[in-house]
Image 1 (cartoon, rainbow, N blue to C red):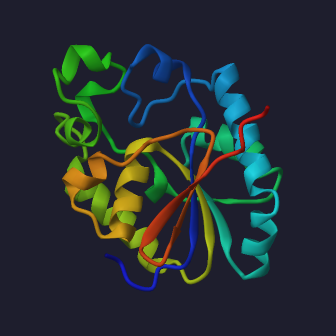
Image 2 (tube, rainbow, N blue to C red; image 1 turned 90 degrees about the horizontal axis):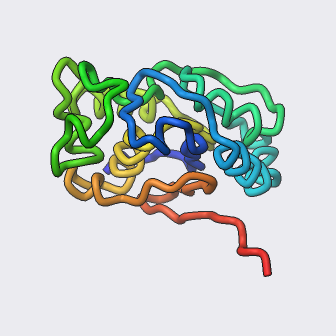
Length: 192
């Protein structure tokens, strides 16, 4: 477990066209769907009172450079300025990027499969850059990034191994609060 990491609100980007197609995005991009845009608006509502607290405590807003995360951040962060950090990009899935998951990963999916992609970054590379990013945080943060990166980031903070990280949920349209070595899923209440 990483020690002394300040509170983090982690937001995965909204649903994309390639998410619907079950296509591996990795470092490539596809646009948010209408549902993905609504998920980002739900995140904006969740974060409306949190962002001013984070900024007031000297914290920051950090976003992956990839288009789907940037599009989500422009909505979810409600116009607040944010820093783009290349270390928050999704895992590089090498030769598999753009391919249908069913065509390349066989029965495996998620973190283990993506980390095994030929020509990709692998688990160790992803874990090292996430650890480097987290080690530099000195104040609360809101992070908008990606599913596989999020599982590794959340797992490192919670002291999990790769197999446990792979079993973490990977929801969109919510926020994960990471604090004191644990996580809490924050979602909007269902409308009656």
